[in-house]
Length: 588
Image 1 (cartoon, helix red, strand yellow):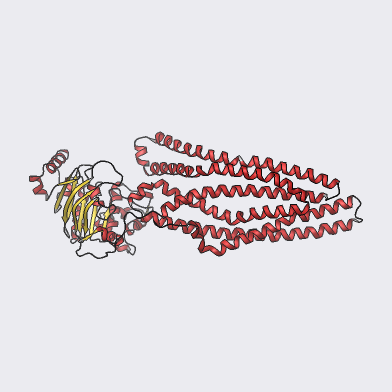
Image 2 (cartoon, helix red, strand yellow):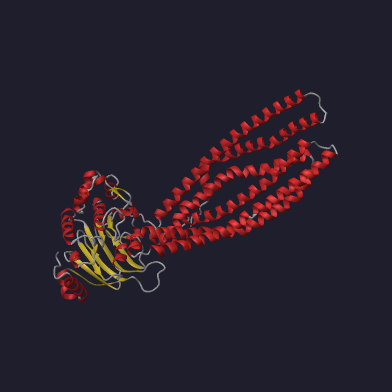
């Protein structure tokens, strides 16, 4: 497993990452001088009021000069703060962008087994919420990780320069603050991972419900899904509240310590003023400095809180980035044959599934240009079988060959480029019809797209749409009917003019007349293309060169329609049941 260091994503933005803390240091230093300058003004005014200095012109001159110094430092500090914000944002946003892109690339390269294991909701959370948390953490570190220590050390030094006795307040208050922060943070840290997992569950419920909205509405299960979401959301809320209670309890406790420290400074300072050891302005400055010192501790506690949350998020993102590929690409890019598929003693079961194999000792061969159909009862293993051809999954035993080469030796991109796969569930994307069809071939022209649509019998309905081929398709093809979605998906596959086309029950929403036209167009345009089709209807498969009958994961018969009617009882049963249901009109 390749180890991934999240902080390495900052290397590209090293300049901004270095400069940003320097700007922040400049801003804090400007802030540290403000209380001392204010003390000068107050001390001068008090001295005049006490009759220690004659003439108001001295007071006005002191106020004017000191005020200009303060304004100048505020301007410099403001500029430094602005530049710190800019550079920290450049570094953190670049970091987040690069990390998110790499994580998304990795998700795209994962096998179906791995995406199922992570779950869609969890992957969405990791690529959005988790990486955003890390991005915010980087920005906070670049700004606050410098600000808090300098404020702490600088405020402490400035306070002690006013009067050494103020140090006793810090010595008493500081242990309390540190112990409180450590206790709270240590209690909260283990819960951050739990919070993110609860958020995964919320996202999973949302994703399942939104994508399955039609089923939810068809079965009037809205209230059930609302209750399911409410349960997941409340679980997330309860866990999040526990963390919030722990972390938010820090602030009132620290505020009590801070206010007590301020009172102690005023008390000690008052005695020192009475003894004429320091002046009133110095006491005011000391109050501000002690506030800065203890405030910086509160700031550090917030940094630790975010670091703890960030560590939990980083571990989840690393889990994706470091995931070993289960389906490892080979090196072969050319086969010894063309358009052939062969199964040799193939057995398969889904990873982690209990029970018997889905496919058991499957052996058959499909020749170039041949049309082979696969038929069988629901759950007999038809889709599982064709999923092994483009290597969505690997076999448990046995070998699948494409073009005479073991699929495990094929370069995955080269292998899948040879295959046009029309899935059982037509997956369309939001955008134009032409974009959805052209998705199968990057450099496709409009003429090629239209030609593919005509073969798939999609041109007739696309041409009637208001904007034709540029008409908008809603997410997941929600604006199209089932048959229209299937025909667009078929157009996408034939556009590539692949060596092998696989139809995974992808003509089920077409009427028999349209399916017959599609079959005729495919025979004319793709005479040398190998076609493997799964179907439930006898009418869809009976014209194939050969038909494989699958029962309980085994091929029990493999021949043409006429011979199967003589030799396969299972095939005759399917034929008879459909003939009876269709009133004998099997040819449509």
